[in-house]
Length: 285
Image (cartoon, rainbow, N blue to C red; front, side, top):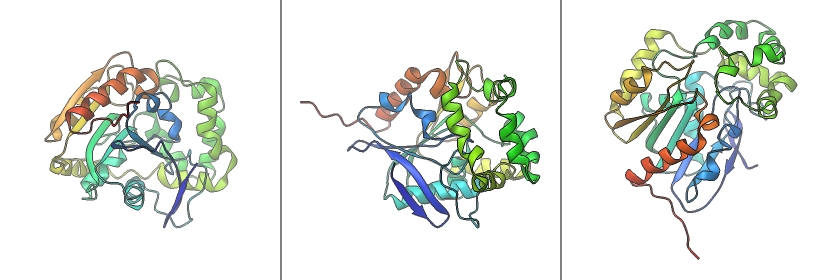
């Protein structure tokens, strides 16, 4: 897996290569690029780049002084895009919605399109049960305790937690891979302890949301109709907030639409990309 060294530390990433339009995928905590494993193979003709952000599923600890707050990770994502020399990027987010802060901070010059798939928005940082978990991560040893609790199937698979993020259920081997860095590395737990409780106050989040109105490029909002973590009303509200926003709702899915409905999501993405000037580049023999 290639990697790039940024001032905050090393970022691993996958890159499918090719001459097609560039799609950059974000993921949730504490996940990694495998969140998109079912969707990327369906996007033939696009160059898909999947950084593993320092949200707890990252394999290399960041530098001790790295800013790993919600805003810090968003700016790190923007720096990653710039350092790879990418331009006219379509930024695609699912679960973690902090990539939107690139817009609110005026750092989205490289982003030509934005796709928001059942993700945090407005004051829903972090969503649902994660709000109760965040204070635990402030306590010394709190992240270690959380990782131990997530080993208990009844807790990990609970419908109000990770078990509720997918109607189909995330395979155990994928979930184990997501939590493995937190289980094995004190430095990774240190990184996650910075991120987990870092969401700003509600008033700040809503003020940042208002700045999203300044993003005048195409935005696709894909919302899941059976999501327990991302409020149903946030889908149309987000689409209306962005001047060129468009809403598509996907049934029979929870937060992890790439897990529950990968074919429908890939089709929706491709249709949006083609109609906004980013058709796939496919070579015929």
